[in-house]
Image (cartoon, rainbow, N blue to C red; front, side, top):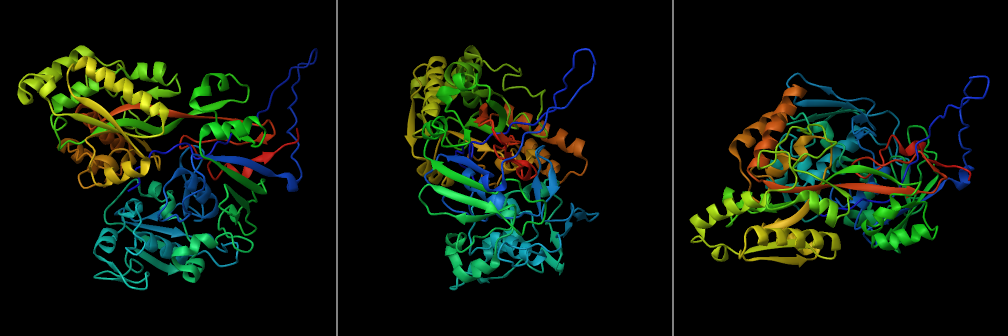
Length: 572
């Protein structure tokens, strides 16, 4: 289950090249500003930070979901498709977008001819069949393989299969998906068969769980294979290869000589890990990095800098609650807690305008964002309504608490520890709830992130503050994946029958306009019924040395693969 508090993966920045027209006195002609001179290839090295960890926890695309690992894996493992700078699906290792059968069930990919890992091993249709099958294997037991559950028999393969003693062979009624949902018709052609039509399927293939992995390395080293990626001259199958991973707070990627397209201009990317944004920003200020990410506390001063850039991220913070536990098993209580909050004040006064307050589940910048969506009070206001919150709370108390807030079920808000801004948000929310619902027993419990993830996996918390960072640009990632009954991410056991019908319909809908209308309607129902209490959408901001050219981040906080080849270091 990929459900984690995720921060921006690394702090890197792009300055977009532009052509400036200059009007010359007396002649009315224009000349283009010369393109900056690139440094020699030996100096095409980008020093980039990775924030929030001392090291990446792993680099297996089938199992890892933290943002730092995603940033690295996207550069060394090829996917059939990827997302471009505009968050559109484009072919990557495939030589074009797939042919789709009339019934919407079979996707036929043609893998580019001549692809190789940096060690010379071919990358072909069999490579992708092996990799997709492995990601769904019970022997791997991936926490993120549900992105591939749309494949025919994928769920049965994963849930009914047993891993043999060799740790590789699957025993059970279905021992492999190769030849079933995954058909290799020749070395360059792969057919992927779905259980039912899924209009979002191509988007899911842009997530690392669908990337190709090196079977030759996995066969040789078994479960420890990622520890050997940097052996010898290193390994990679996309733009770069991993050439150094000493687990001392650094990691190095070097241009892959076997990459099929134009060579990236950067010869090398030297990553350094920083446990906190404060550590990282101090390094930036000391000229130890080419890019910098100011901590929230320094946002006001950093945002005034000439080299400052920011964009809205597809990252939503929200309160979620258990619909099976009092008081949140009652709509009146959920409404009371939702309407007591002034989201605008949280964004402005607590988080100093570093976020975008919202009533939305599908964030701004996503396909299917509904500008006409109404909050739980039927308005677009973000300031809440404490008087109405008190009214709804009292109506609930009259039914469930003998008319007194003090005798209502105790509410415990669980939050991740060690994140001061989230503690401030939680304290502000609890103060608002106690003001609108005086006497209601409400407290905060902070636990470390690992413990919180375990508790969420066991569906233990009653009320929690968390976030979701989108994986691919489709409303299904924010709606069906979060709220359909049976979804691993539906931790609160949310169920809105009409919304369920709309989401299921939209997931398979062929007409793109009707599909978005169905998702919009489903989201509105979920908001009105308080599936979550959305709080704010985050921003990502960055600075860069003036010599770093063409670097840019997307709303996922990553640099897209079509932009990476254009980045270079210019002469000062």
